Length: 420
Image 1 (cartoon, one colour):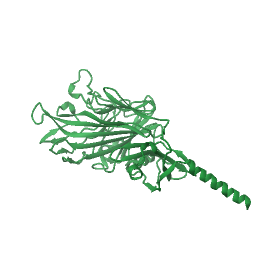
Image 2: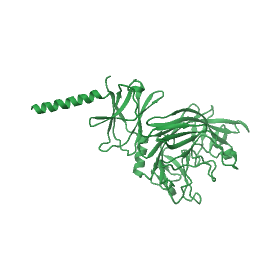
Image 3: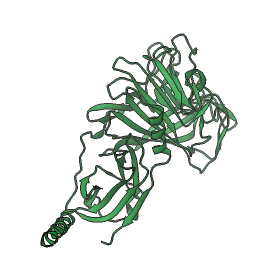
């Protein structure tokens, strides 16, 4: 009996010491149903839980009476949002975290830091010294001898693989207006005239970088917000121009902790004048991707969430589309995901079929206006959200579906607040 009492007392003292050593808990955060192998971001509204200064907030994961610091990032906007990455852990789909009040300023670092580097032409996002993507805000001109009307700013190129391969290309000879990753619209009705922001060689319109709203970096994500103008030519009269749409790009690259990158691409569209804008039905337009010249018919594949391959995918609808292929620096790919709130979801796609040209070059676009026009009215905000997973090697269709689900339906965070 004496030994049992001593053992119980020892356990009590150990638990008490653990409680004293830990920082003061503010709230317990429980996530159930975490089934994704690949880590994905989750967030909470920090202002709804605590008004502690950012420097005194700490996030820890609780596992079997142990506590470990978790990398996090606080986004300060109208509200403060606390972000961190969560993936499936062996043993249970439930993860338990505690938000705690630190006894001193917190500095949580990761092995893979994300940062932005800006020069006079472009903003570069890097992860642990490796290039991820480059946003080109300076005016880029086409190759010598090509009509300068193909000049363009406000696009992403290069988009790199984790092994250093380049997934995008710009100004290919067959389509000088293709610009890596970009988001123009093809058949647009503005002030009773048809404008084309996609085929800029037709000299009816273009898209230009205007200015940066913000850039950010941290333990969880790095990125930027940029304002872009969709400019109509010869409106209101020949030789003049007028901005029809203003668009904000919110680009975020997340630290997944794996040999892959997760990137969010969010486009917010607003009418720039009191005139409405109609994005008319057309077979392509919107979020586009011109793939590396290394890919062709023989060495690349397409698979959609509906099980369609490259031969079948064009004009079909999908939640996600996975494209990968052989490259000089190893097999790699990109998974494109659409968000359920997007216009005309699941979105139609433009996927060049195998016989698009002799080589079989790869082009992909989520085209929400492929089979349905989209009227945009002044005073309203229209948002399209996409997520990309960039990876080395291959992933399975099941993994692709899990990553999409973590984007479309992230696990609910159950919050239990403690008395302070």
